Image (cartoon, rainbow, N blue to C red):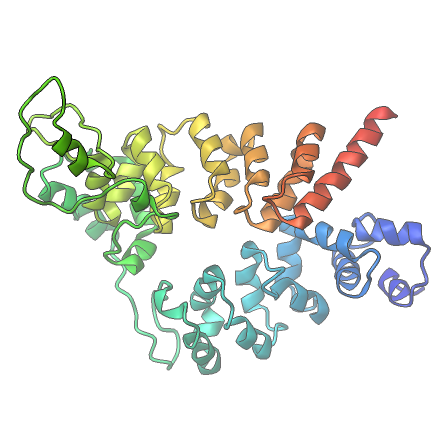
Length: 403
């Protein structure tokens, strides 16, 4: 008896079964179902779009098993590893799958995705291949991506020094803050130290990268380098007109209540003086205002530390889920936290956020209520793919409610 995929290839199935196939509803093994979906997505004009929707939201555990299996068909592997379809969770498995040819990886090395370049740079297979390393090194993003921890072949990839646990524990956590006279947070906080040790390699790879906010925070706030204090303006019931003109166009920093040392630095000035470890510590133990700024940090390991803060509230996460000026890694990290994933407003905001990766949006849409699906179908900010699927899901739910 021929396999279902063989029947589909020769268009020997009725349209109702083809429709079921595009939704992943056939009673066949997962690997064959994936093969059917890929065939429809790439070769069938009628059911191709639905098949692509299904593939984008396919169960991650099943997808990982298929991506790591050398017996998986090349058609499926090539589809999964193509940049427009690639799911980040599958990249490490696909890179090490011997059935994925070197030629495919050479093409992938030219990707404009920083996430793909970083993943390839960490791949043992890539680091053992002079051909792949050469192709990867020609990518403009290669120089800015974190280096692998150690060379695994004769390609002269320099090993990075990874701080040992004892070095991490003994090193001062916020040296820049201490130099600035700021009060140190609890240096032996177990949560902070655990995070620092777990991500020591990434922190070392970032080096002394300064605070740089996603979305141009410097246009909204003025971060000043340390400079002599301005002359004090004499107190007066009415501010002199000259003084008003001098300060026009500048956003006055809030003056916090003076501490013991009388410091009046703004929150942004404080953050600008911190190194990466200091910003991580502040992200996990600082105030709401500090978290709202650090979630936009261009250094991924700092921004993700905000989500680890025990002080973070549900309302803050709802706001972060809707922000366009955060890294994609932050938007991916939010639903990975069980506490946040259970919050319906978070799910709704993520799907409606045009910056949310497509595969994540499509996977979360099944949890939306009918009214939100209707609103989403008319949202011009999100992709056409999301709008079309939202409309389809809305119609399906509406019809099922009528029955």
